Length: 255
Image (cartoon, rainbow, N blue to C red):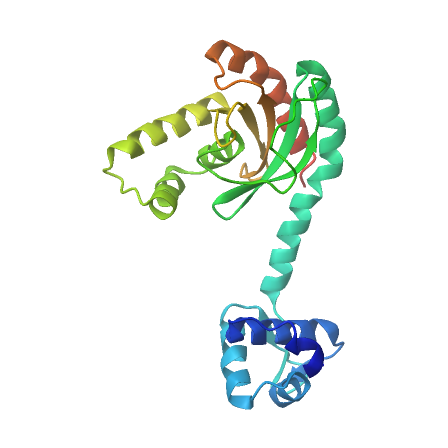
């Protein structure tokens, strides 16, 4: 095992050691003591003790009651994997809904999910026009730039808006720019959809509606791309009817 791990090491040894321990515990069918973990990974006992304590603190590992002073995979690993799985499980439901939406408005349709302070395209269906948008699966965008990110942010509470603006843009609540962004998010919340004009992709405007879970929390967004730097209010209202309906249909599939 040591030789296999050597080639995977980076310049962050604490992270390397954490990954080695998590990989080991995930691969074993029984809880392991610290000495067994150190023997199997080649990590020194002192380092192993520090890393295990950090992983315990973050609930990435847990002490197993079935064996004295032994460790197993922690609950947070299951929370993380469950969150990712639930987001990905939307995709099979997205396809038939997006196909209908595409035929209604004749635009390329995207499914985006929030990851931290970013929004990521996880699925798309190309429109009949065949426009070559640089909005591919895996495309990552800031929440405040993309229509999908804006509507996801807008469906959260105002404290989340201010926290995002402070963390991502370094804007304090009293900053003049904050008022404009807050007003835009408030409007998107009221309307149930958001738009972006020429950002983050020049020459492309987008409109997006939120996908909500049973707690009315935004977990994704359905977005349509339009070949234009500007999207008029009249056009946005016209497209929004179909888009909001599609997002509600997908929301109804969330359990």
